[in-house]
Length: 406
Ligand SMILES: [Zn+2]
Image (cartoon, rainbow, N blue to C red):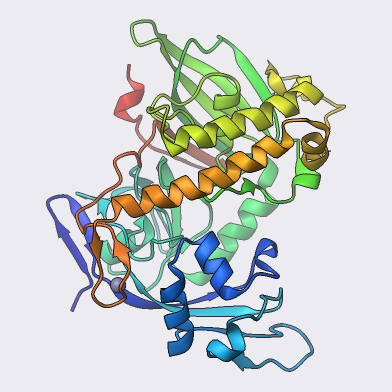
């Protein structure tokens, strides 16, 4: 029986069991399993204990070391045991995958024996991530074309539309991934964004570290002591619509950091017009609280390094560019530091309460609160489109998105 149902433009995945295997992140080390799943993932303590007792949540220790590895199971062993870096956490979970809006068909830009290049709609994750496993665009393409397997070799965020290169076999995936790394300097990705305000005419380069606040109250990336600072995006205004007071801007990320274009546009004061994450509609929402913390962090950074607050001419590559920034030191030097951490804790609490409020039903099988089957997050598409992808002699390009024709 298929576990996928598509009806009324919504693609639903029936609940199913998945065996997750996870290596701990540094920040998990020293916590117990209960502390981790309760505080970091908002799971109720009683259910975590049930899962440990039943053996669906357990740990394999000393993985990848010369020491013998053993399987640790059960409440007595795991209740107070602290997570170690060389653990492998096994969790067999009943998964309730979120539904996505999908009407088809797949727009194919190029295809040969090795690759299929498609125009991904916004609002669908590229590959399995977080709560998504089957509701991904690579799975949709795989099912549509009856492919045995499919590989992705670059990233394209869920909220973003545009060029997605998918490989049909492992050799092509390895080849493409290597090519993209070895030709890194000749890979040119061009995006289009629709932003608030009158973006200045001309070509610019903006260099600024990217920091983002996770809804669970973490600052990312977590290597704050050596935060990459040579993160640059080239910008060029395509047109300005006076009635809307919005601009269409071509964006070319030189590096490819998480949410780089969205963060850079926000820091410059031209956020993507419908980007709920960086430009929340509701000032009292948890997203607004998240943005407030980010804004404070950047205010501290700009005070210490004013050069990160402005764009330069596109040819000004800045020979004396700072390679890394010690953001921890910036935080420590600032009197607002403790306030930032207090607000992070508040964000985490409010966010998990908010998520649980939106979950209306309880699963009879795993006893967890879950979203309604037909629930589709409304804010999962933004005006950011990957328009073209060039490397070596190859160039893939999509049509212009309709929102860019204003
Ligand atoms: Zn369930």
